[in-house]
Length: 296
Image (cartoon, rainbow, N blue to C red; front, side):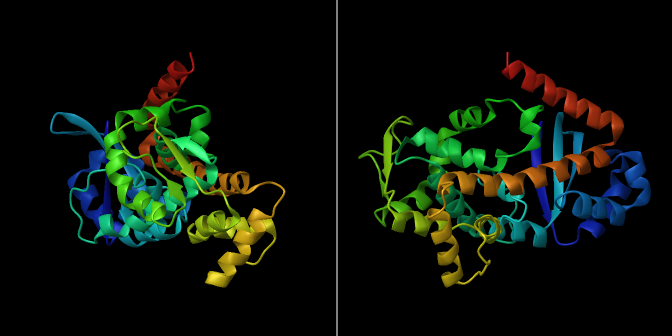
């Protein structure tokens, strides 16, 4: 099933019109209450995205999600939910882009690279790098325990390796130019080629300071420091993380996991409400069967 994401300026207005045109895309009870209610469930129960699944379109079955552009841009810049921003850390195709999202997403990609490097050891393979980036938005996802293929991340990376290389070429080049990464002579020729990173305190501190505000807030809470979005504030949080007994990698992983866990649970509940009993049951059944097969 192909997934589409639509960023719209007014979700309430969009859903109201879409319900009139395509009421069968929505569960009957949700359509009855109208676009205002659909949007309210998406934003107050879920993470701002309403999905219509199992929609027939041009001899295919698709799933499309609708999100307000303001919510979309906030997630991309801050990782408030690490939901749509997580999807945009993987190769996607931009069909229409009136808000320059592809350009704005560069900061999201840079943050994803920095987060992945903080989770990786001083030596790793190119495939490890992309798998760690790809896995960020699944870290703590409640669906991974029962409704997702356990090999999903590796399959995504191995099936889209060249696209990951194209997507992150600029971000990797930026970090390598600072001396924080040592790349093989022909980077991108072999996914198993070895990459080395500077594991000094100064390098780790720079990577930490590049993380989005929602993750820095989590780290501030976990280290008992006050969150301050200024450069000095980020430096204080970074220092506290690097000096913690827990270790920076574990702390960053837990901070990301906390955001993803809450978002995935909220979106799961919202999804059940949005899809209705039959569609929700069908969708979950497909997911669980696929997850079960991956564990055999």
